Amino acid sequence: MTPAVCVQDLSRTFRRGRGSPPVQALRGVSLTIAAGETLGVVGESGCGKSTLARLIVRLDRPTEGSIELLGHDVTHLGGGDLRRLRRSVQLVFQDPYASLNPRRRVGTTLEEVLKVHRLVDSAAERAERVEELLVMVGLDPGFAQRYPAELSGGQRQRVGIARALAVEPSIIVFDEAVSALDVSVQAEIINLMVALREKLALTYVFISHDLGVVRHLADRIAVMYVGTIQELGTWEQVADRPVHPYTRALLSAVPEMRFDGEAGAAEAPVLGEIPNPADPPSGCAFHPRCPHAVERCAEEPPALRAVAERLVACHRAEEIGAR
Ligand code: SF4
Image (cartoon, rainbow, N blue to C red; front, top):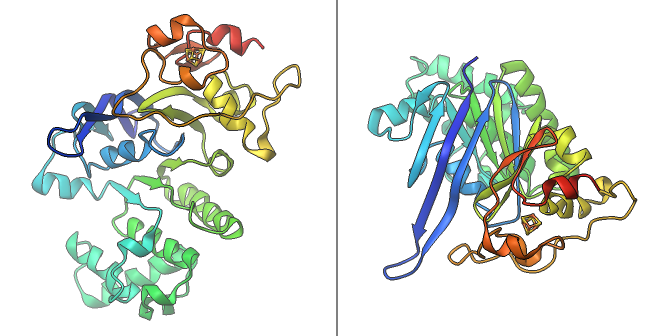
Protein backbone atom coordinates (compact mmCIF):
# COMPACT_ATOMS: atom_id res chain seq x y z
CA MET A 1 0.00 0.00 0.00
CA THR A 2 1.31 3.46 -0.89
CA PRO A 3 2.48 5.27 2.26
CA ALA A 4 0.86 8.60 3.09
CA VAL A 5 4.24 10.20 3.79
CA CYS A 6 7.73 9.08 2.76
CA VAL A 7 10.72 11.35 3.42
CA GLN A 8 14.23 10.30 2.46
CA ASP A 9 17.50 11.81 3.73
CA LEU A 10 15.78 15.11 4.44
CA SER A 11 18.07 17.96 5.47
CA ARG A 12 17.43 21.67 5.97
CA THR A 13 20.17 24.20 6.57
CA PHE A 14 19.50 27.86 7.46
CA ARG A 15 21.68 30.92 7.70
CA ARG A 16 20.59 33.51 10.23
CA GLY A 17 22.39 36.31 8.43
CA ARG A 18 25.22 37.05 6.04
CA GLY A 19 28.47 35.63 7.38
CA SER A 20 26.74 33.66 10.15
CA PRO A 21 27.48 29.93 10.37
CA PRO A 22 24.98 27.53 8.77
CA VAL A 23 22.46 25.95 11.15
CA GLN A 24 21.54 22.39 10.23
CA ALA A 25 17.99 22.23 11.57
CA LEU A 26 17.42 18.80 10.06
CA ARG A 27 20.09 16.25 9.15
CA GLY A 28 19.31 13.26 6.93
CA VAL A 29 15.89 12.32 8.31
CA SER A 30 14.15 9.34 6.66
CA LEU A 31 10.75 7.98 7.67
CA THR A 32 7.58 6.52 6.25
CA ILE A 33 4.04 6.96 7.59
CA ALA A 34 1.33 4.53 6.51
CA ALA A 35 -2.11 5.78 5.46
CA GLY A 36 -4.33 6.08 8.52
CA GLU A 37 -1.38 5.99 10.91
CA THR A 38 -0.46 8.61 13.52
CA LEU A 39 3.25 9.28 13.96
CA GLY A 40 4.18 11.21 17.09
CA VAL A 41 7.36 13.29 16.76
CA VAL A 42 8.86 14.33 20.08
CA GLY A 43 11.94 16.13 21.34
CA GLU A 44 13.01 19.30 23.09
CA SER A 45 12.66 22.69 21.50
CA GLY A 46 15.14 23.19 18.63
CA CYS A 47 15.39 19.46 17.81
CA GLY A 48 14.11 20.01 14.26
CA LYS A 49 10.55 18.73 14.67
CA SER A 50 8.86 21.95 13.51
CA THR A 51 11.26 22.14 10.54
CA LEU A 52 10.17 18.60 9.64
CA ALA A 53 6.50 19.69 9.92
CA ARG A 54 7.01 22.66 7.60
CA LEU A 55 8.83 20.49 5.06
CA ILE A 56 6.15 17.79 5.01
CA VAL A 57 3.45 20.36 4.23
CA ARG A 58 5.91 22.08 1.84
CA LEU A 59 5.79 25.45 3.56
CA ASP A 60 9.54 25.19 3.18
CA ARG A 61 11.95 23.48 0.78
CA PRO A 62 14.53 20.91 1.89
CA THR A 63 18.21 21.63 1.29
CA GLU A 64 18.62 17.95 0.43
CA GLY A 65 16.46 14.86 0.27
CA SER A 66 12.99 14.07 -1.02
CA ILE A 67 9.37 14.22 0.16
CA GLU A 68 6.64 11.96 -1.23
CA LEU A 69 3.03 12.41 -0.22
CA LEU A 70 0.47 9.77 -1.21
CA GLY A 71 2.97 8.38 -3.72
CA HIS A 72 3.75 11.73 -5.43
CA ASP A 73 7.14 13.41 -5.24
CA VAL A 74 6.36 16.92 -3.94
CA THR A 75 9.95 17.97 -3.12
CA HIS A 76 10.20 20.64 -5.80
CA LEU A 77 6.55 21.55 -6.39
CA GLY A 78 5.71 25.21 -6.89
CA GLY A 79 2.89 27.46 -8.12
CA GLY A 80 -0.42 25.80 -8.96
CA ASP A 81 0.89 22.30 -8.21
CA LEU A 82 1.82 23.39 -4.69
CA ARG A 83 -1.63 24.97 -4.23
CA ARG A 84 -3.23 21.70 -5.28
CA LEU A 85 -0.98 19.85 -2.83
CA ARG A 86 -2.45 21.98 -0.02
CA ARG A 87 -5.70 20.09 -0.50
CA SER A 88 -4.00 16.84 0.53
CA VAL A 89 -1.93 18.01 3.46
CA GLN A 90 -2.70 20.62 6.07
CA LEU A 91 -0.82 22.09 9.04
CA VAL A 92 -2.48 23.03 12.34
CA PHE A 93 -0.36 25.38 14.44
CA GLN A 94 0.11 25.79 18.17
CA ASP A 95 -1.53 29.20 18.23
CA PRO A 96 -4.55 29.36 15.96
CA TYR A 97 -5.13 32.94 17.15
CA ALA A 98 -1.97 34.04 15.35
CA SER A 99 -3.19 32.46 12.12
CA LEU A 100 -6.83 33.66 12.33
CA ASN A 101 -7.56 37.14 11.04
CA PRO A 102 -8.86 39.00 14.13
CA ARG A 103 -11.11 41.21 11.97
CA ARG A 104 -12.80 38.29 10.24
CA ARG A 105 -15.71 36.31 11.58
CA VAL A 106 -15.07 32.56 11.89
CA GLY A 107 -17.58 31.84 9.10
CA THR A 108 -15.81 34.26 6.73
CA THR A 109 -12.43 32.62 7.44
CA LEU A 110 -13.82 29.18 6.61
CA GLU A 111 -15.66 30.45 3.52
CA GLU A 112 -12.43 32.01 2.29
CA VAL A 113 -10.73 28.60 2.27
CA LEU A 114 -13.63 27.11 0.32
CA LYS A 115 -13.43 29.97 -2.19
CA VAL A 116 -9.64 29.84 -2.67
CA HIS A 117 -9.78 26.12 -3.39
CA ARG A 118 -12.99 26.44 -5.44
CA LEU A 119 -14.65 23.71 -3.42
CA VAL A 120 -18.27 24.86 -3.60
CA ASP A 121 -20.04 26.99 -6.17
CA SER A 122 -22.74 29.03 -4.50
CA ALA A 123 -22.90 31.18 -1.38
CA ALA A 124 -25.67 28.95 -0.03
CA GLU A 125 -23.51 25.83 -0.43
CA ARG A 126 -20.60 27.62 1.25
CA ALA A 127 -22.75 28.58 4.23
CA GLU A 128 -24.00 25.00 4.47
CA ARG A 129 -20.45 23.61 4.36
CA VAL A 130 -19.28 26.08 7.04
CA GLU A 131 -22.10 24.91 9.29
CA GLU A 132 -21.15 21.29 8.62
CA LEU A 133 -17.47 21.98 9.45
CA LEU A 134 -18.32 23.72 12.72
CA VAL A 135 -20.57 20.84 13.81
CA MET A 136 -17.82 18.39 12.81
CA VAL A 137 -15.42 20.01 15.31
CA GLY A 138 -18.04 20.21 18.05
CA LEU A 139 -19.01 23.88 17.71
CA ASP A 140 -22.50 25.31 17.38
CA PRO A 141 -23.12 26.70 13.85
CA GLY A 142 -23.73 30.10 15.52
CA PHE A 143 -19.93 30.33 16.01
CA ALA A 144 -19.73 31.35 12.35
CA GLN A 145 -20.76 34.86 13.45
CA ARG A 146 -18.08 35.21 16.13
CA TYR A 147 -14.68 36.90 15.91
CA PRO A 148 -11.52 35.05 17.11
CA ALA A 149 -11.27 37.29 20.20
CA GLU A 150 -14.70 36.02 21.32
CA LEU A 151 -13.47 32.41 21.45
CA SER A 152 -11.64 30.44 24.15
CA GLY A 153 -8.28 28.80 23.33
CA GLY A 154 -9.97 25.42 22.83
CA GLN A 155 -12.67 26.91 20.59
CA ARG A 156 -10.01 28.66 18.51
CA GLN A 157 -8.16 25.40 18.05
CA ARG A 158 -11.43 23.74 16.97
CA VAL A 159 -11.76 26.48 14.35
CA GLY A 160 -8.13 25.83 13.31
CA ILE A 161 -9.00 22.15 12.82
CA ALA A 162 -12.22 23.04 10.93
CA ARG A 163 -10.17 25.25 8.61
CA ALA A 164 -7.76 22.35 7.95
CA LEU A 165 -10.69 19.98 7.31
CA ALA A 166 -12.34 22.42 4.90
CA VAL A 167 -10.16 21.21 2.01
CA GLU A 168 -10.81 17.54 2.81
CA PRO A 169 -7.14 16.62 3.35
CA SER A 170 -5.74 13.10 3.70
CA ILE A 171 -2.88 14.17 5.99
CA ILE A 172 -2.84 16.67 8.87
CA VAL A 173 0.35 17.77 10.59
CA PHE A 174 -0.28 19.11 14.11
CA ASP A 175 2.63 21.25 15.32
CA GLU A 176 2.34 21.62 19.13
CA ALA A 177 -1.39 21.99 18.46
CA VAL A 178 -2.50 21.44 22.06
CA SER A 179 0.58 22.72 23.92
CA ALA A 180 -0.92 26.12 24.78
CA LEU A 181 -4.17 24.67 26.17
CA ASP A 182 -5.16 23.72 29.72
CA VAL A 183 -4.89 20.00 30.46
CA SER A 184 -8.68 19.41 30.46
CA VAL A 185 -9.09 21.29 27.16
CA GLN A 186 -6.11 19.37 25.73
CA ALA A 187 -7.93 16.12 26.47
CA GLU A 188 -11.09 17.37 24.71
CA ILE A 189 -9.16 18.41 21.60
CA ILE A 190 -7.22 15.13 21.52
CA ASN A 191 -10.51 13.19 21.76
CA LEU A 192 -11.81 15.27 18.86
CA MET A 193 -8.65 14.51 16.82
CA VAL A 194 -9.03 10.78 17.48
CA ALA A 195 -12.73 10.82 16.50
CA LEU A 196 -12.02 12.75 13.28
CA ARG A 197 -9.14 10.44 12.38
CA GLU A 198 -11.44 7.41 12.62
CA LYS A 199 -14.37 9.06 10.85
CA LEU A 200 -12.40 10.59 7.97
CA ALA A 201 -9.57 7.99 7.69
CA LEU A 202 -6.93 10.69 8.22
CA THR A 203 -3.17 10.29 8.59
CA TYR A 204 -1.64 12.42 11.36
CA VAL A 205 1.83 13.70 12.12
CA PHE A 206 1.58 14.87 15.72
CA ILE A 207 4.49 17.01 16.82
CA SER A 208 4.95 17.80 20.49
CA HIS A 209 7.59 18.32 23.16
CA ASP A 210 5.25 16.50 25.57
CA LEU A 211 5.41 12.69 25.54
CA GLY A 212 2.47 12.55 27.94
CA VAL A 213 0.27 14.15 25.26
CA VAL A 214 1.63 12.15 22.33
CA ARG A 215 0.82 8.83 24.01
CA HIS A 216 -2.92 9.49 23.69
CA LEU A 217 -2.92 9.17 19.93
CA ALA A 218 0.39 8.02 18.41
CA ASP A 219 0.71 4.56 16.83
CA ARG A 220 4.45 5.09 16.36
CA ILE A 221 6.83 7.61 17.80
CA ALA A 222 9.98 9.28 16.47
CA VAL A 223 12.28 10.83 19.08
CA MET A 224 14.38 13.66 17.67
CA TYR A 225 17.52 15.36 18.93
CA VAL A 226 19.54 18.10 17.20
CA GLY A 227 17.99 17.49 13.78
CA THR A 228 18.18 13.69 13.71
CA ILE A 229 15.98 10.74 14.71
CA GLN A 230 17.32 8.93 17.76
CA GLU A 231 14.66 6.26 18.19
CA LEU A 232 11.68 5.24 16.05
CA GLY A 233 9.21 2.47 16.79
CA THR A 234 5.69 1.63 17.87
CA TRP A 235 4.41 3.41 20.93
CA GLU A 236 4.48 0.17 22.94
CA GLN A 237 8.09 -0.66 21.95
CA VAL A 238 9.45 2.79 22.63
CA ALA A 239 7.42 3.79 25.69
CA ASP A 240 7.40 0.44 27.49
CA ARG A 241 11.01 -0.47 26.79
CA PRO A 242 12.94 2.56 25.56
CA VAL A 243 16.49 1.88 24.39
CA HIS A 244 18.06 5.24 23.54
CA PRO A 245 19.35 7.07 26.63
CA TYR A 246 17.66 10.27 25.45
CA THR A 247 14.25 8.55 25.13
CA ARG A 248 14.73 6.99 28.57
CA ALA A 249 15.54 10.38 30.07
CA LEU A 250 12.53 12.03 28.38
CA LEU A 251 10.21 9.30 29.67
CA SER A 252 11.58 9.54 33.18
CA ALA A 253 10.52 13.20 33.21
CA VAL A 254 6.82 12.31 32.62
CA PRO A 255 5.46 11.45 36.09
CA GLU A 256 2.63 9.17 34.92
CA MET A 257 4.95 7.26 32.57
CA ARG A 258 8.06 7.17 34.68
CA PHE A 259 10.40 4.64 33.13
CA ASP A 260 11.94 2.61 35.93
CA GLY A 261 13.90 0.03 33.98
CA GLU A 262 14.19 -3.64 34.85
CA ALA A 263 15.97 -3.07 38.12
CA GLY A 264 13.54 -0.38 39.26
CA ALA A 265 16.17 2.35 39.00
CA ALA A 266 14.85 5.35 37.12
CA GLU A 267 16.95 6.78 34.32
CA ALA A 268 18.17 10.22 35.35
CA PRO A 269 16.23 13.07 33.75
CA VAL A 270 18.16 14.69 30.94
CA LEU A 271 20.62 17.27 32.26
CA GLY A 272 22.49 20.15 30.66
CA GLU A 273 21.69 22.45 27.79
CA ILE A 274 20.49 21.52 24.30
CA PRO A 275 23.52 22.01 22.03
CA ASN A 276 23.70 24.88 19.59
CA PRO A 277 22.58 23.43 16.21
CA ALA A 278 25.06 25.79 14.51
CA ASP A 279 27.85 23.99 16.35
CA PRO A 280 26.62 20.51 17.30
CA PRO A 281 28.86 18.22 19.36
CA SER A 282 31.07 15.79 17.45
CA GLY A 283 30.11 12.12 17.15
CA CYS A 284 26.79 11.42 18.85
CA ALA A 285 25.23 14.86 19.43
CA PHE A 286 23.83 13.60 22.76
CA HIS A 287 27.21 12.58 24.18
CA PRO A 288 27.81 15.67 26.39
CA ARG A 289 24.53 14.91 28.23
CA CYS A 290 24.54 11.11 28.07
CA PRO A 291 25.23 9.12 31.26
CA HIS A 292 26.30 6.13 29.13
CA ALA A 293 28.78 7.94 26.84
CA VAL A 294 32.13 6.29 26.10
CA GLU A 295 35.09 7.59 24.10
CA ARG A 296 33.72 6.35 20.76
CA CYS A 297 30.54 8.42 21.26
CA ALA A 298 32.45 11.72 20.91
CA GLU A 299 34.18 10.54 17.75
CA GLU A 300 31.72 8.64 15.60
CA PRO A 301 28.08 9.53 14.85
CA PRO A 302 25.90 6.47 15.48
CA ALA A 303 23.78 5.24 12.53
CA LEU A 304 20.04 4.68 12.95
CA ARG A 305 19.77 0.88 12.93
CA ALA A 306 17.39 -1.91 13.91
CA VAL A 307 17.70 -2.97 17.55
CA ALA A 308 15.00 -4.74 19.59
CA GLU A 309 12.28 -4.30 16.93
CA ARG A 310 12.74 -0.54 16.51
CA LEU A 311 15.34 1.83 15.04
CA VAL A 312 17.90 3.37 17.40
CA ALA A 313 20.89 5.66 16.86
CA CYS A 314 23.20 4.65 19.70
CA HIS A 315 26.52 2.78 19.72
CA ARG A 316 25.58 1.05 22.96
CA ALA A 317 21.94 0.28 22.12
CA GLU A 318 22.14 -3.51 22.70
CA GLU A 319 23.86 -3.11 26.07
CA ILE A 320 21.57 -0.34 27.33
CA GLY A 321 18.43 -2.01 25.97
CA ALA A 322 19.25 -5.21 27.87
CA ARG A 323 19.26 -3.36 31.22
FE1 SF4 B 1 24.95 7.91 24.70
FE2 SF4 B 1 26.96 7.06 23.18
FE3 SF4 B 1 24.53 6.11 22.79
FE4 SF4 B 1 25.10 8.62 22.14
S1 SF4 B 1 25.96 6.81 21.21
S2 SF4 B 1 23.32 7.93 23.19
S3 SF4 B 1 26.51 9.18 23.77
S4 SF4 B 1 25.80 5.84 24.62
